[in-house]
Image 1: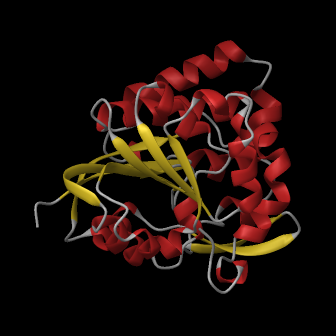
Image 2: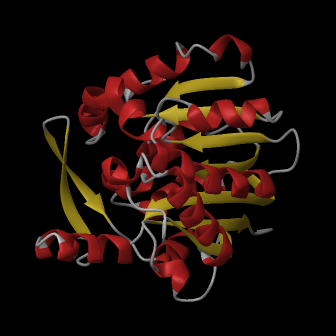
Length: 272
């Protein structure tokens, strides 16, 4: 399934095409990436009943889809980047995951899935929705696909990341320290500039209302650092293990849950 008028409709697609080959090396397979992803996986397993049919937005190279497939779920995994999807389909494990269907589809075009439901749940991991200017439209489209009582789990970059603020201030880069505060920035990826949005949890909640109610909120990466700190921590596994333990301990506490690299929001589909 592809866009009718070309990938120019999907602003971030070309950028992610350009970095697809290096994406897993730069994030998925890093110590920081694994530590943050483990926390998301724990929430996904708690959210979706065994044997669920799940819709994944911005699936990237398919790491989460393969994980859920190993747990007995079936996944319809969508992404705007054709290069990312090619890597997902050609992954060395792919032959073992027959319950995954990959679709070339952007978050902005989920309406094309009309009639493809129902799904018992849906999720978006690691900031795909930060590249979407109209999250309310995504919410409306997902609401048409997810059954009443189904869970939707969203992991987005947060508006305020305390670790990032302190890191860049200590390194004498005050503009980078506060780059998220305005709610919008420009990222440079694969030699291309793309707009990135940093909504608050309240703004995302309003976008998903009235179809969904917010069931829980926690931070991902309060003590576990953002991915750009990987070179400084990759050889300190014991320290990273302790930081991950602290994240699991207190990342859903008030105030703390708004201070991480990412926020993890779980919504429940309303009955009507």
